[in-house]
Image (tube, rainbow, N blue to C red; front, side):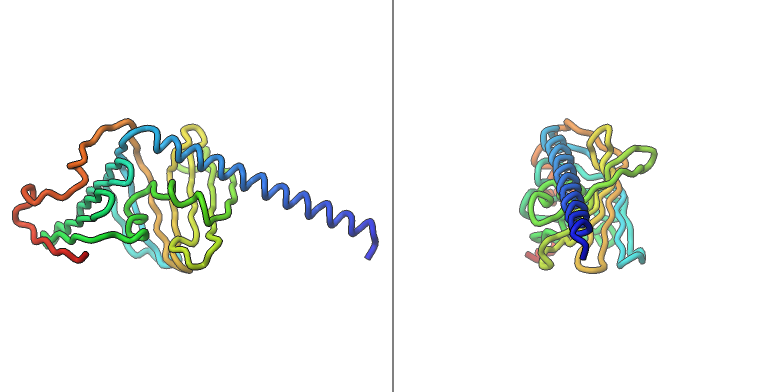
Length: 214
C-alpha cells in the first residue's frame, strides 16, 4: 500500500475520531444543562402524551398531567391516577375502583416519569447529536446507546428545545423492540407541592379496593 495513502487514512481516522469525541462532549454538555434546569427550578407540572410500541406497532397511549417533586410524582390521566412518594407506588384503576400498592421497577418509573432520564444518562451510555425540528421548535436530538446489554433501557432519544433547553420528547427502548415515547405538551416550573400530594389517601377514595402486591 502506498505510504502517502496510509497517511491519508490515518488523518481521516484521527479527524473522524476527534469529531465523534467533540459531538459526544457537546451532547453530554447539553444534557447536563437540561438536567440542571429541571432540578434547579422547583416542583413541576407537565402535560404529556405517552405511547408504547413493539418495534413500530402501536400498543397503547395515554394523556395526562404529572406533578413532580424531586423523585416523587403524582400522575393523573383519564383511566388511572398514580402516586409515588419516592419508594411506594399507588395506582388507582378508575375502571374497577382498585388501587394496587407496589414498589416500582426502574422501567415502570421510566414509563411514567418523563424526566427520569436526568438521572440515567450520566453513566453507561454513548452519545450522538444532530439538529432537528419538532412542533415548530429548533431542537437538538440526542441519542444515547447503552454500553451494557444488560441495562434496562438500551436506547434513549431526547429532543431538546434549543431556546429553552427543555425536552419536548423522550423516547426509550427496552431490549430490542419495546419503545415508549413521551411527548411533553406543556411544562410549568417553580411550582410548590406538599408531600401529601404524592401519597394515596384512602379517605379520598372510600369505595376503592386496596391490593398490596409489594
